[in-house]
Length: 343
Image (cartoon, rainbow, N blue to C red; front, side, top):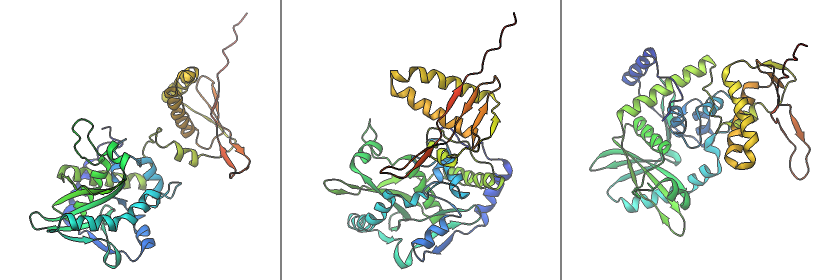
C-alpha cells in the first residue's frame, strides 16, 4: 500500500494524542436529510477517510478528489449517488433481517427522529452509524450496512482462494472509524445482497488501535493541507474526469513546463501513441498521461518544454444535436525543430 501523504510530523502527532485525551465525541441530532448533508461538509467522514491512507485504498474516492470536495471544487458529494440512495432505501429491510438473525442483540437503527451524527470537532472527523448494537456477550458495537449487487459481492467480497468473506478495505476502514467515534468495542459489516433472494451475512471487522491512530493522523494532516492551500498529488488514473472538469476551458496563455517528470511523460506518451493500434492497454496508459499533461497545463492553452517542444490543449466545443453541447481539450504535441546545421 503506497501512502499518498508523507508521515505526519511530531507536532501533528502530539495534537492527535492531546485531542484523543481531551475531546468528547459529539452526538448531534439529525433534523433531516438536508441538515445531515450540511453537517458532513465540514468533516472528513468515515465513508471517505480511507482515501487518505494511500492510493488505491478507497475504491471510489481519492485524496485529491476529497480535497476538491472540501474546498468547494467540482466534485460531487459521494453520498448523493444512485447506489447510495438505493442503500438508504434498502437499509430498513437489512435492519429487520438483522433483528431476525440476531434475536439476542438490542438493535437501534440510527434513523428517524432519534438519528444522530457523530463528530470529533478537534480533528473534524465524522460518521453516521447505521446500527448501534448492545450484545450481551460483547458489549456495545456497530454494524454498517451496505447494499451490494450479487456479481459485485462475489467479485469483491469473496477471497478468490479461500472463498472467505471479507469487506473491501475502504469499507472495513469506514466501520473501524464508526466504531471508534461511537465508543464501540466491536464492529461488523452486513452487506444486503439482492439477487434471486436476499442474503445478509454479518462480517466481523477487527478494530485495530494502530489503524485508528493512523486514521486520525491522516485527517489532521489533510486539514493542515487544506489550510495551507496545498492539494494532495492526483491519482491520474482515477482523477482524470475531475481534472478534465477543473480545466475544461483554456485561457489562451502559454506557460513554460520545466521539470524532468513532464518531459518523461511526453516521451512515454509518444511511444504509446505509436503502439496503440496493438492493443487497448497502451491507449489507456496514454490517456492517463494526457490527464497528467492537462493537470500540468492547468488553464493554459500552450506549454513549452525545455527543448522547445510545444504542447497545446485548446478547448474544442461540440454543438448540440440530440444531447447537450460539450467541450473538451485534446492534447496535441509539436516536437521541437532540430537546430539548423551551419554550412
